[in-house]
Length: 279
Image (cartoon, rainbow, N blue to C red; front, side, top):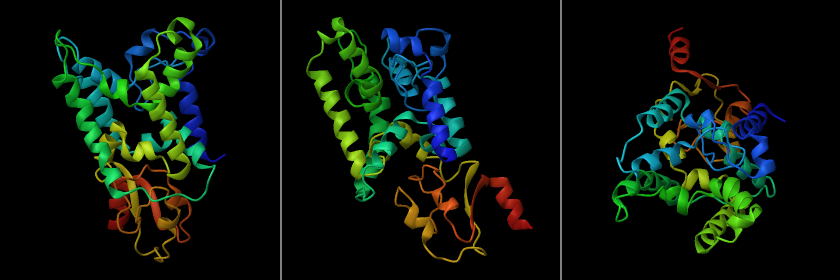
């Protein structure tokens, strides 16, 4: 097991370490839920120790006071400014699920360019819909969580909905829709690499905005590069690494760095790269 895969497993386990919840099919509601994790991890997952930033932001935006959470926005901004989409590639439990499914078939289809842009629309709607689409009482809903989020369905909807008889009796068309979305994404994960992360995830879209300006970033030393194209060949998200190493699509998996025969690619702080160039 390589280092990134180990970190992914540890992140998934630590984020969902309320093992009593899995046994009793109950939701942890302790002080840990006051803290957001930097990735998608459903609040209602029986094992979740923290809150999902997307659900938290939407709940506040759709409440009576329609509050914008500077805490959530600040957390995500710090994470993104520090390392771009590193959290996507190393910490996200649902990203790990998609990668495990990707191992079923080595042959992958190319994700259409338009699909990669769709996540920015999802990000915009995730923020504005709870404010604009309200009921007669003036309340909005966490619409991304309610209608789209496959991580929530996998982590909370299925275990709680199917495992608790009183909830199972209430399942209806909305649950059927969410289950269909989940299983479609799981199937697509076999033939596309991480399709949800690359086309529908609002967190992925937000972190992508920082990839080119983040403190920790990929750098290519032109003196060591032999222009073999190996970096782009091993890139799972289909980036031309030589031309755009810090593309918004990069999830910082570092396969390009690890497979570069000339050791021309590095991942580190911007100040380190500047000092190296000055020397």
